[in-house]
Image 1 (cartoon, rainbow over the protein chains, first blue to last red):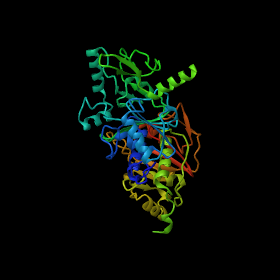
Image 2: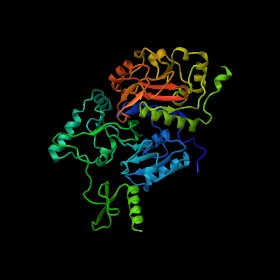
Image 3: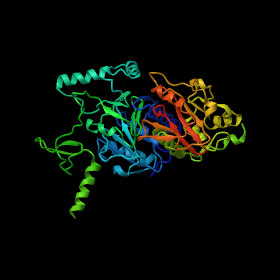
Image 4: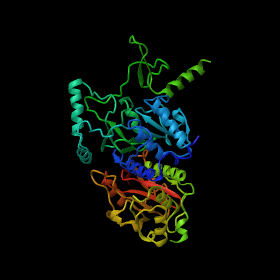
Length: 283
Length: 187
């Protein structure tokens, strides 16, 4: 069902052209935050307005669209954004990572490796990796211009001095093609290695902050670290309680009020596919 | 305004623009990859691909420079009706279109600022032919290496050396399109 009252994919054509121009510049300067005139969307800031605007600008009628929120296809945010584009763009939707052509994500990269022809759209709350170290936009702009990332290295060093390791477990800063330090959005640092050399196009949209940044396919992305404290992609030391996977990122789920807990795959498509396959093999 | 200027736009603007932009984005994300792009029927001397790029990306917010023979009454009328883009000198434009020879010298165009390197011009260069051979390309968007029949090498090498400043290029020939962003290492 398509709402004929709306233009294809909700936004008007001039807005889409403005976003599309920003996407092209973001792809041409990997990791650089390109300003765009973010519009009000029929959902609050913080619910993925940046990602929704990017999806609206890149979707074609033939796409199969998938939305995940912390890896899950069935949470409120994911369901409502999927429905939004079913209604306004009339696109097919799927929960299977391998079948999707455009995947909008909040805070995860799917476990199933992405392929050429796929586009991963990230919802980004704060695109500026230096923001909590330097609140002034004029200053952080200049630091990016000069490639002056000393402040970030001092922060990582102080983490190690205090805690023995870098304390960031998500939104772990990365260096893109040796030039721009980028915030990969609040994905767990477990996902950071998947940013680099990815065959898919990765687009990052921050609606409230009005910024778009991008990683073209096969871009070199390195998580910041020190020689004597190398980056480590960590995850809970458990297998998934449902599918038994040992290589996937896990959510901790509290199951009663006496502290019982279980660890399950955060990527629901990955987990159900594995369980379905195991069930088929057993029959 | 001549009646012909009213012809040659998209038949279904929203959906054709969406499909067309995907081709342009894939081209920009994968330098050297050649895409097919159509939908517009611009007046001569513009190619179908160049005219389609103008419809996809240009509007009242994007000063456009028509270089050389592209700066003719037919193209001016077509652009002002379909895009509404203000025509501008090379130094002030966001987009420029013309043959490679007409677009030169490249020093005239905005290459962005240190704080905002995205505020740079995108050049749409019409080439007689476009093929995946000739100059070696490497960098973001390219697995290993790619090849593209660039009109020359030195200008693009100098452009890439200015990264993150620099110009971005879309090459058009008939209905074929390829791109060369500033991030690509040439030769």
